[in-house]
Image (cartoon, rainbow, N blue to C red; front, side):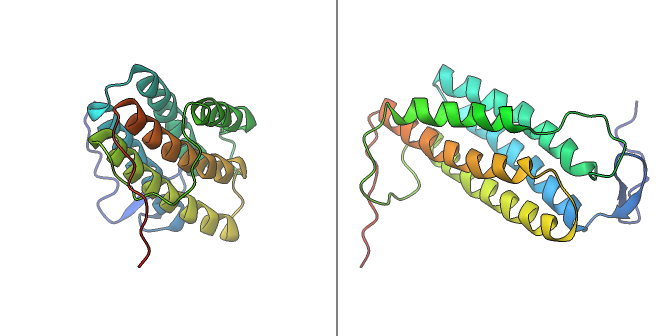
Length: 180
């Protein structure tokens, strides 16, 4: 099987079901950003040294493929692929709750950063927020699976606590925001 098909050479791509759309359409931008987030997570995994974090990030990468497919298939389509659902969101919340028990309570805003893995997790958080904004914008124009918005919102929170946890495990201090 060849990797190139030449079907997108004129700036269009296909949704599930074959409908052709411009590559700069909002739906394509939304699931393209989810794909970008998945790649950022791949980089996070390459610099991470904590096995439990890697397991969670692997779950998320699989979820993001599901989310991308969910966004690539308009609600009205006959797509039978799995969609993001409440159980996926509950799993993220479980991870957040479990990790927060291991962290000092947050009393200040902190700057993104710390060790390399934590800094990459903060980058993943910001790409996730951008994906969320695009999916929210898409939801204003088209019918989408509303769980996708909730999932991305919760996922960015998980990246935040994962970054804090990775710093804690490596004894890397968090840098408090110093408003001037």
